[in-house]
Amino acid sequence: MKAEEKRKSLAAWLFNPFLFWGGEKLFLAGVLAMLLHIPMAMVFNIRFGGSLDMHVGTQAPALPVILTDILIAWIIMFMVLYAAIRLFGKTARLIDIAGAVGVARIPLLLTSIPAYFTAPEIETPEEVLALQGSELGWLIAGALLTLPFFVWFIVLLFNTFKVNSNLTGWKLGLSFVGAVILAEIVSLMLNSYFIGLMS
Amino acid sequence: MESKLSKLPVKCPSCQSGLSVQSLACRACDTVVNGRYDLPVLLMLEKEELEFVLRFVLNSGSLKNMSAEMGLSYPTIRNYLDDIITKLNTLENHES
Image 1 (spheres, rainbow over the protein chains, first blue to last red):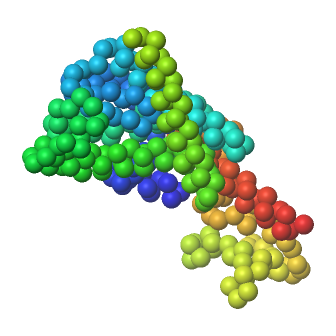
Image 2 (image 1 turned 180 degrees about the vertical axis):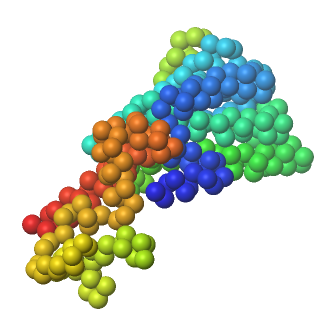
Image 3 (image 1 turned 60 degrees about the vertical axis):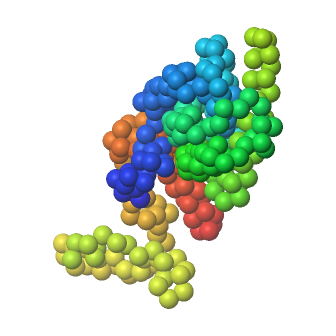
């Protein structure tokens, strides 16, 4: 099988490990990746509010906020991807998608490091416009450093959807884009609601 | 010699239409039977697809066992099976 040959390559391990990695082992790896969000958020002052989001702040978020963020981000993404697959009459196992979405978030976790060291100390988004000199330079450098990791995250999410749905062509592209946008909107709304309840 | 026998041509190299069997020979006594026999749909699959079907049957249809045996994930195995089913349906519809 072509897939058997693909598994030997480093590129497959980095960008599409889901060809040969699934079931309980992948799910446990996904759960572990989600648990890693907690120390990363605490150490690097990060909020993962939203299925695609990573925001660096000036202080570490509280544990209930971190847990709310990561649970919503993870569950909403894998549930929406699963629903999109079922919508096209395809069968898939929730355990494979949940595990793969958790693992796909590892590059997003890694963006925390450059983001922490390059982000300027500002409280509101409007303050970005007032940035000058080295602070602006660091902000741009940070954006450039985090971008490849974000692209890597999206590639892994795409391959999660592709391997689990077996869709091709426009159905694959359109349903993936639609599902990811929907997951982001729903996760932001739920996040806002639950975080609002805490304050 | 062995490798030449293992690859069964199923399409005409000239016009890409499906081929049929015209002659069968007995290896023991060299008797040759001539006629026109359609190839079974399963034999129209590629070699690696046929190997997959064989593994599927030998594993009693367990995709989970095949996944462990082949070192591939369950969805990858299921996708491969789905692709073969689609191909068999197309071939059957083309035949009838």
